Image (cartoon, rainbow, N blue to C red; front, side, top):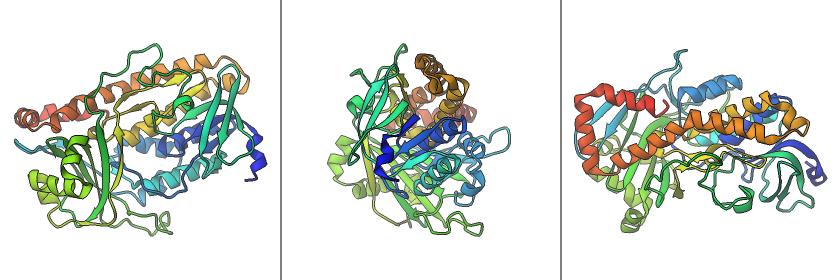
Length: 413
């Protein structure tokens, strides 16, 4: 698009084109507003992610009319979760389907992000990619100027949606310095794992049933394993005859002190295989199909949901611990929720009315729907990353298996 077009005005500018930003843009433009998406990376691209999508996430895909496209590139239906503590008995829980019988499935991030952003464009959102946002100025009363590196003029918007995933972008996020405070509400309690990093690798020849995801860990490390789609976006990825090959995703979160001890993701991977019997069996013949990806630090908890014309979705609003495996689902559902709230208050954006009413409605509904998942993740992570605690918990849950299934539901699945 011609650079002069960046002087145009939009009702909403969405910063970040991942699952949260793309879904928010799609639902907001469907409400009849002018929307643009600013994404700094070119797609397709991989990111550190467990790639698990719960039934609630698949209902978002259905709402956007892309479920059939994604079914062709997704992994198989996931019905069970195997828990592999370092010590104590191994456990099996059931992953519930939704009322329509839809089960959880995994989708590789390169495929998912590409199709979601494509759908937002099909619905009418203007996509600027790559576009690196350097600064956001303004507020609910005045509107916003969004400055993009290399563009001669700022883009203007009535409101902005922050879907960039990071709590560390200063004035882009909020006019206030506090990023772990949700205006008018207490933040989630500290998780105790803020000094952690995340890693991801794709594998082949893994010994894990297609309908099962495995979670577990060792001292200072939590890991999740499941079968996903293809590891790179194939040219015919959305073709009716395409079927994903047997590719698996291993994502793990590690305390920084453990990384310093072992020195690399590859050594941590070997450490997990040696110390955890369940993962040792699953990965005994595994072949790596690429390089380890990394991200961090991981910072679970509620951040900001709304502040002075800025709406936050995905990890920019709150990060759920990787143990829960709900990051993508939460991002998709938050985008859908924001779209519905804005649709209900369309006049506030189109006609210049008070955005605080919209922000308050979105914040209340976001906290009511997602708050418990962040609390659950913080609690469960402390168990699986501590062998003694996990052994005690595994022994109890082995004796009372229904409790494990209840914990799965409590986490939002």
